[in-house]
Length: 386
Image 1 (cartoon, rainbow, N blue to C red):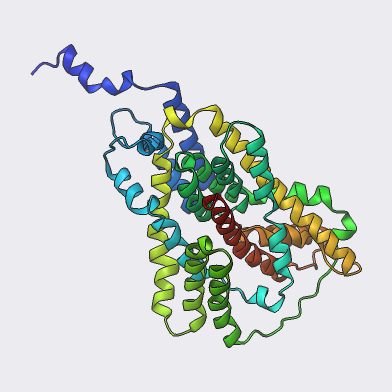
Image 2 (image 1 turned 90 degrees about the vertical axis):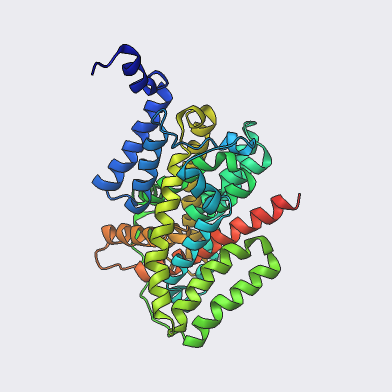
């Protein structure tokens, strides 16, 4: 049986549709996979996103998702479109992840040192600063600017949840920026922390005095916070409610099977589907453009502003406490839990190998987790009411 030129042309038809943008996004997908494997930067997130990006840019495979076409009502096909409709358009995957995060999070360090709530709030300054910068650039609408600002939450599920409601066509670059920068916490934060603090400030010791937190307080915390959020910012209820639901299961002590499922199987399945579907939206023709580049730049700027604001607030607390508060703790006020807390501890140990800041940083970090979710809900409430 002979294979004619027409048959060969049909076999390799996809190559004729292959563009530089597809090649670029395949390279980006490969880079994400490299960072995940070689550097161990958030591998559970970057490997699915990277593979999704590669699949989306194979011409003729029908694996890519053009979000602008979806927003325009144009029909799409394929398994990734089914996952997008079922888990991202409905916000199901991010909310499932929040249940898992809540089940894995110990809010004890925050409850034993409530003043860390202020540090967590300061760590969200980048959200609103970048919102204004995006709007001032003239490239984005108010809703788009708000969605870009949420990258400053340094919280992938929150970024996806907000973007899917306010600017779904920008979901891909916003999600990629949020998750990628989360993985780069150990690289981005230390230079900013050192630049804004003196050697003497970094050497300030904060002996940890463990204050017992009653089981009653641990159980009441998720319930009370959910109710307060519902009354103050109802739009944040799905985010904070699922996070606190997972934590309530953990602290109840009577549903270990559900806690294990939520923090392992359920969260892992949602992460796989969420990551590979987000990757599938990184189609070269719609992703490789000036807007994406601006979003990536604004995203890392939001991260830097968050870190700087947290450290500067830590310096302010140091003044009020007459030199007893280590400003490095402020850098843990972002939502990248528990990476930011570990980075703070590491930088402190570099200056004084007996200076253990981890538990204080964990309090600030858990406060940042809650504050980022609340900030996302507040932004949603403001934008959707306008």
